[in-house]
Image (cartoon, rainbow, N blue to C red):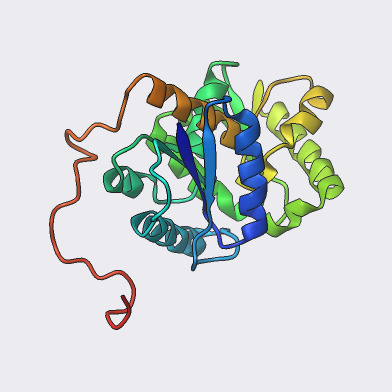
Length: 240
C-alpha cells in the first residue's frame, strides 16, 4: 500500500517532518510518499494562503508522475481543497483536520484544538462544521506561534501547554494538534496533560490504511462526482 501525503505549503523541511510522523504511524506494509507544492505560500496562515494552498495542492496531485498510490492524506489543518481533491483522484482522500476530530470524538465527549495563530480559528471552525464534527468541539485555541516557529521545540511545547489549559478550561476532554507542523508533539505533552492528544497526521494515515484495506473509495454519487469534462486552464495560458 502506498499513501501520498501532501504538505499544504512549499517548505520542504516541514514536508520531511510530516513524512516522518506519517511513517511512524503507518503499518509495516505501507509506503509513504511526501509531496511539496512547487508554488504557493511557504506557510498557510489565513484565508488567502489557504485558498492559494488548495489550488497548489490540486495542481501538485494533477501533475503527479510518481509510483501509483492507494490513498491521499492532506496535511493542512483547516486548509481548503479536500473536496476538490476528492473529485480529482480515484482513491480515498483523508484530511488531517477531520481525521483528528473523528478520532477525538471516540475518546471523549468534547475535544479542543490547539493551533498556531488565532487567525486560523475561523477556517478550522468551518472545516469542522463541514465535516460534521463541530458540535463536539469545546474550543479552538491559538498558541500565538507562526507555522514556521514550530521548529523551536521548547518554545512550541511551552506555548502548547499554555493554550491547552485554556482548551481544557472550556471543557475539552481530548486535545487535537491543530497544525501538521506539530506532528510528534503529542508524545511530549500527552503525559504532562494527563489526557489523550490526537495527532492529525497519524490519525489520517491510520484511517487511510483502513479505507484501503476495506476496499472503500469516495462515492461518485452526488457531491463528489467526477469533474465535468471541459477546458480548464491551470495557471497562465502561456505556460504548459
